[in-house]
Image (cartoon, rainbow, N blue to C red; front, top):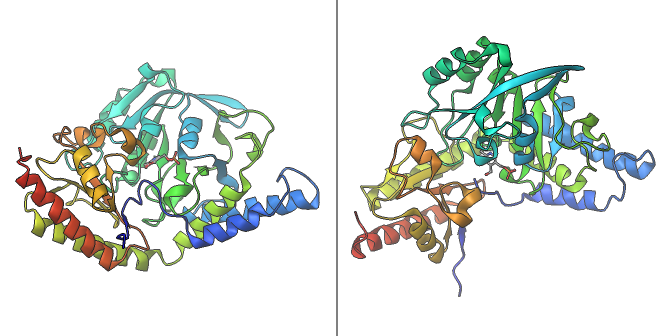
Length: 388
Ligand code: PLP
């Protein structure tokens, strides 16, 4: 009998939650366009607005501050722009500062010209270098416009939680605007947008058990907004034109609500499994390096390097053994390259890293099986003489 595969790549995408699937099926049965005034349209509108409340609750924001997009990447391209409006008045962000460990969705700089993007370095631990940020913002030419800073709350490869409250204090002391990529934080840690001090927050549905094809830009208020990326029919109060993907948005909302409920208990259970996994990995291969292990990390992520085992080789070896994990950033796992996160942390990025990420339905048996697979892959590496 074929062995059950083990899915441990939740940071790449999380399996669709039952609640999200059920809500989506209801939404798919609804024929109306949410902008239509008839009963069918109003029913679709009610579904979108319920999802807006659910997504807002995930990050303690006002529902009216949630703009739905097609994904987090679109939300990033929407908000990473030199052009903002404060009410009707134009406001210019003249330079974008992104941390070196940002996801490519932000590192690419959105709508900024390449020479208007500066990188904020991180320490070896994978934590953003606050002193370097301070120095960069001190040197920012204020007369040209505001500094716009983009940092992630949780890194997608290491799971390391970034000191966003401190980042916000520095950014606001320099009259800048702060965009926080909360894609990997949502559903993994409690998020209060106001307490974080974020001006904008980016979310993705498929990382929290909702469907692919929905994301959100959450703003601190309604007065200061980026000039829209998609112009047209005026949906989403004119901030994002295009008929709403009702079913995907509804699934996103249902997943957000599911994630808010029982977060602490779920995290404790996932954290215990991750710790057992790392204990087993260390026992099987004492030379395994677990990146960011000394820092505050989300409970579900383990990013490691096995000396002598290149990430791309390792990924295939684990896959053949029935374990789905990622080499480096999952979004680019089809084209395994060097991890920019490891490079930014000052590690040998040639060997690369492998990421195991767990989720709410991961079981203790799967973890034990994963340890055995790890042990086999690690010992084969030595037997094959791959060790450096
Ligand atoms: N930001 C982070 C931290 C991510 O991990 C990802 C996806 O891997 C994204 C942004 C992009 O999300 P989406 O797939 O919704 O565009």
